[in-house]
Length: 624
Image (tube, rainbow, N blue to C red; front, side, top):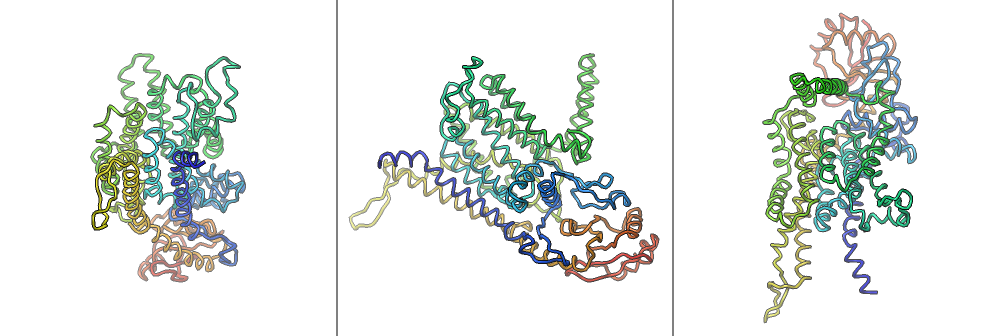
């Protein structure tokens, strides 16, 4: 019995580390929303109406939450705002679009459909905690994937490093962004893709027995005389399904997902076969059907979305691709070259700027996470120097990751993102970090190679002995237990130091640190409640920054008074609804200017209602 227990422990002890890490990850990331969001049964009344206080720090998060909740409760992904018919569709928050009064999401539908479908069953209050849950699942499948490529030791280190990696942790807590859901689905898809290319003549071991044992006795070769087991159909179907969900969550990532799939297929073309590829494609397409359906309803085409620029790009690429096929048949070389250049310019919508891309990559990879960059670089050197020991699948991993990284660096690195009000700030809240999660995930196992070799070098087979005075001293030894214990301790110390540094960075390492976001959320609640008490339930509030706070309890218009056409729309709307203005407190001279010039021209006047915070005040618009 003791020998059997040791055998089981040796085989499965890694799960004794992974599962607690996953649970702690979920509790840590989920606790941010647990303590900062509040529902009506706890929040009391605001403006005379019991209202949830579930607010988000970005317009994208706000839109995703509102539409996911709406989808869970009604099955719809739009809401009708009749007053937009009088105002040229300007009555909407950021990350929303309005088409003839229909408010629709601007962003991708994946998170709305997936989270909304789960919330239909579990209730909408689960929504803020689904990203931490998917993030936790992503860690488990990341361990399984890396174990299949680099072995169990590296997989364990990589999974723990992912669990404490600042970007992954931060955006799991910022739970209505798409990115952690996207990357978790992507990892799961890669794992099942790896399984479906496995050797058909070998029994599948470990985790895969969950799927195999139930069907191992039944083989299609008895029916259609093929030597492919049912389990490989299941893996192909699961891989296709999860890749479809991945694409639905962030369709724009097709720019690198398609090349990645082509690379993986070319390296596994013989093991893939025709039938598994066909099943993969069928289930990939099937999982995209909900997106196609809602795209058709919302935007008039299965392949169009909420981004107007992306829709234009899709149409241009489709037309240019058709022109290339036609020109190829006619042998028109110059026409082919021109259309290919058009497609390139369309894909790189903001241009291709290699110098800026490399500078940005240096800032957000090496500069922001030097421990990961240098450990991965040294791990890569070790990988190359020990190339004779490297397996085929490890080289496939390296080629695929490097290809994806090049595309991501030059595609997103050529853009300029300013998520932080300080345009010079390099912080975790800027979009590059979440867009480059696939790069970070590829660096982690390379860092794992270095950590493994480093700890092997440090430990040098130490053992404890006593000298003549009874004092402990360290000597070299070939004892495996002492060597293993030393490696375990040194790896735990390294991971511990990285974890402490990462948690500090996530909590308070920048203006977007979770501690500061939680403090702002607390202040925002008092601000929100005061505004609701001072305004009618059917009122509209013009604002520049607070749409994400005030919607949907109040109708909002994102605007100022610098556009005469917008001011004319305000005047038109004022005949139907009360209108307020909430922004930075205006000096008396600016109020006088508005009342004697800009607003007066539209027959409006503005008066101060109350100062809400040290910087912001609420004003009311009235007819002159």
